[in-house]
Length: 317
Image (tube, rainbow, N blue to C red; front, side):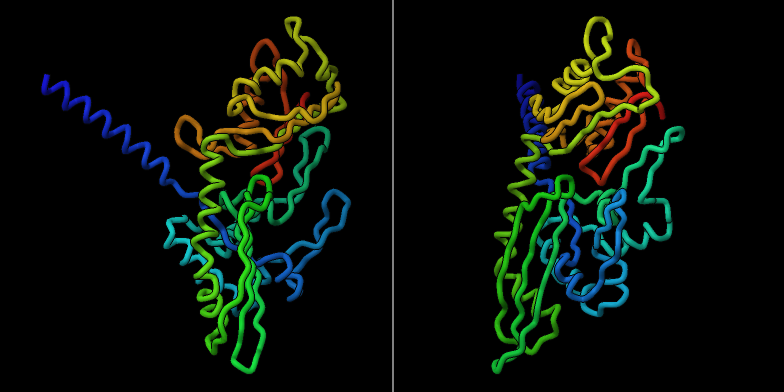
């Protein structure tokens, strides 16, 4: 009897311990200069988004040419690390992308030339796998009392690019260098800011992480989303799979036709059964494998834009 009680207490302790470990998990973060900061300092480059010209931050140039950004990110990063957030080094991730030179703005179908563009930030997100991107802006003004720094911290979900936390403030007059002034100014705001990050991540742990999923077809494919398999239209087959594999069956069917199925606000688990993080591509890969198997036998091309958007094109690779 005593042995059984000891065993029960041991099981409860292990389960409770794992629960606490799960609850204490923090989202990984990456800190970057804000778009506005980069534009003000002309650290920008042109990006061709499928024929549309856009100006985007040139983070590589910012890290190479600005004397403060590395120190600023280090100071703010230390505050986040002190609060338990794992930090991905943006500068090192950018260098890794340059060394590999494996990412392109254009991914093509082997047979039909279908393409999708990823912005430099999408590529960086995909490389780093950070849960949250924190962007920092600051400006130093000179007064009679000394230098005063103003700052804005904004946090964005890497998958949806939605703002999930923000903080704005001013420092006291100081003669310190900019990184130290900024760290001191942020200090009084950082706890509330980190609480907002934790609330967002805890909500995702319960209700799932949001992604977008689009299903299209190649023009060369002789079937479409209205084709029936065992008396069931392909669209209904896919939606049935979504009901079983999303968190609480949550997703929004925003557009549907014989050639297109667009699913938004798709809630996927944070982790797979091996406790590895899941992104849009990995989730869509499972659907791709499902459709490849009998009785469907559908080959498809899987594309992704960043961490939070995947596109499956049916009919060929």
